[in-house]
Image 1 (cartoon, protein in one colour):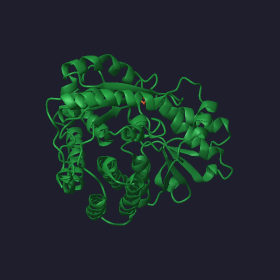
Image 2 (cartoon, protein in one colour):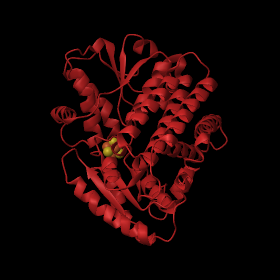
Image 3 (cartoon, helix red, strand yellow):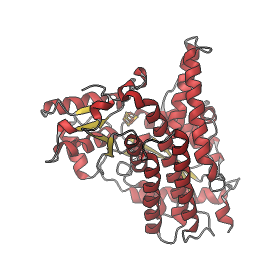
Length: 428
Ligand code: SF4
């Protein structure tokens, strides 16, 4: 139950992908399809997800682990489950984060249940992703383009939906647009250049439709920046559909994207190579070529949205975010999401956001450290409202808590010293 090569996945097995973000998991499944792997997002999370998670886990795990494994267990417990024809994508990592435990724990559960033949696909950069066979470079590039495309679509959707006359019309448009983008990603047998152009064309079509959506931009809504643990902030079930609640309370959300984590890990790789005396090495050259291609593709896909993302620009370099975090959590001493969350909160305040919510799974170290730091950050930045919301899969009165937070946000919005820049559609 280790790495698996492409021939083992294809064509016999269905590959299930964790549904961290709905749009990104759909786009990643399309990327796998483009190299002939039959891939799908894992099922939607629900009460059964938590029930199965609780049945097989000890209770000490974080919510993302419970939800990820609970969703996979829904597949395993299905009457039609066929271990010989199923594989689960489960990336892994070292370090103290529980993420490294997901794979061994799930492997044990599968063994204990008598399914040693079900595969866990665990791609890793340490072996150059060779487990995916000869198409690995194509998959890595298409996968990256899929992440960027889904980030762009989510960003556009969250900017426009709060102002749409019909919320459901915006949601339907999101689904249609995502389908078109995924079709472009999944097309097999074409060059990276043509695929990238097709993805951009699908995104441009989505943009044109969003701009025609009946909407009212007369009044700017309070803008809430969302930072936090990557799974919990992007998986709506895990954060109890927090974005919907913010919008119901009259707010607009700027969600931190997935690409940020890649830029951060690239920068960490750069520092590791420098510390190892490899500033001028083949490894550094290879890394720089990869980063160059990633930036080039991102720029190409983002370019048509310059007007729509005016005032909502993502940082051009993750080191800007890390720089904001430095007085509170220097990158060299505090690794991981906590550094990004503090730095991005400040970045968003400077862009004119009216408040920050940090979404954290209960008991995750990132949220605990950030909670200690945020009061000082808030004091240093004009008593800007920042609040952590913890999630453990149990019910809380989130609606009440969001309502209270939005009152603080509105007060700040009225007294803040600089107004935010807004895109062209606000000036219609
Ligand atoms: S960052 Fe925290 S919540 Fe996320 S997997 Fe690691 S321990 Fe769990």
